[in-house]
Every structure is written in structure tokens, then in C-alpha cells.
Length: 161
Image (tube, rainbow, N blue to C red; front, side, top):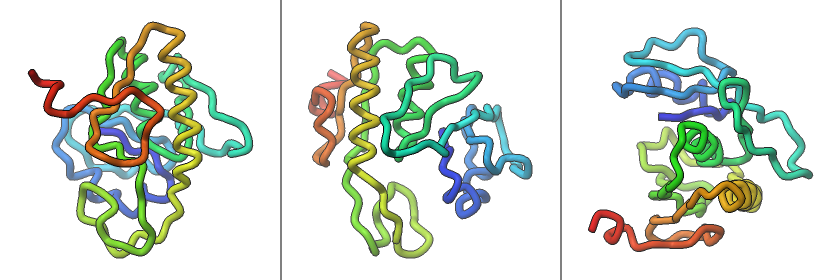
């Protein structure tokens, strides 16, 4: 489980604390009071960067990860650091709508009024793809539908054949 968004950290803190998962990677912006089960890994998530330049890609998550408009970018950095050479993206549709209550896989607390900056997400995904391509890593989008076309696609059902 990974959560690094500063704005959402306070809003979803009780939910994050209650998840019974073996490992949590949590951004260092609001972690001191968490009541958690399992192991929590605090990551220094650099989010205070300019959106005028593409993010870097961290090879050393024990020092920092680069957060850039989507937690999936952080997850990709962590997965590659952990040694994965084939990564499947599931449910990464990169498609948000303002003022609705169902933008997420979990129950939203009120209408989603945030600008999710899908254009910036695409920039981050392109950086991840470039890194992966130059390091022999394959990132494959197995999401059904959506607007993320940076990575090669595969039908979700074909993954488990």
C-alpha cells in the first residue's frame, strides 16, 4: 500500500491507519501519529518541485522518491527498486471527473473537487517509460479502458493465462 499525497494524507489518515496490510509506504509529510499494523516504510516524497520540468526517477528510494501528480509514479519507482523487471498496471485509467463521488476505487468522502492534472501524470509516465526502456524493464498497462496510452497494453484476462 502506498500513499504520499500531502493533501489527502490528513483526509484519509484513519483509513490508512486501519488497513491491515503487511507493508505500507507512506510519505513523510504526516506520519507521526499513525496507528498501524504491519510494517510501515516512511519515504521522503519530493513533491515541492516545479511542474515546468519533468520529474527525475529515483534509483534510491531509501533516500527519496519523486512524486509527480500520481502515486503510481511513486509505485513504479518502488517496484523497480525492489527488482521487478515486468510491471503490470491495473486500474490506472488516468481519467478523472470533477465534482463526482466515484473517482476512486474506495468510498469517497464527498465530491472530488481536485484538479488531478492528468497532463502531468502523462509526463511522469513518459519519464518512467524512458527509464524502464533503457534499463530492460517492461511496464504494461492492463487497465480496462482509460486514457493512459504511454505503455503497451494487454488485456487483463490474458495476464493470468
